[in-house]
Image (cartoon, rainbow, N blue to C red):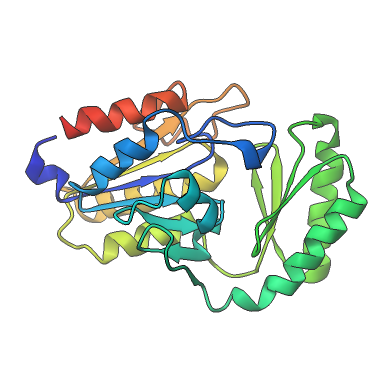
Length: 251
């Protein structure tokens, strides 16, 4: 990719399973080698560089060294920072649900003591990777609790998440970023899980409207399954390959 194309292309990255390997404890997950540095270099030369993740912005900023040039969209877009995490804005319609999410996290910890409950502020994730036999129980609990309290259920790789019932996903984030930049000639999204499908769809929709726009949907494989393989333009075997792809684009 030449410098003119690069400066008119937007890049979006998921975090878990894409910039980092999946781990048993979500709090101990770290980016693969060279990921923060590669993204920092890309941010300085591309039209837009963003991480779009289920993680809170504060977590992403800490892992990516708070590089100002990288936009951070946390909690599927419920949080956003354009300055590497120094300032964080919350989607106004989601903010009132914080006490309800607090209560959901407490209830999950009490009723599913063998699962790992990750309280993210505006969402509550219940992981069963360390206890896969709990899959049905976690799914049933989340579906019931979400229906009773009016919360949205988001499913991922061996995790179920409760979120505010607002229309916001990774597809909204990508679509808004693309719409704000009509001069773009291309867009890339790197992802690995079900939550990345709307982002892939947003890129494809832009390419369908504008045949000159080049959409590249990059899926990272995982032994637990490949929920993006049917939509991907490029498949990578593991997160450790992502920085190398970025470096090749920069060359």
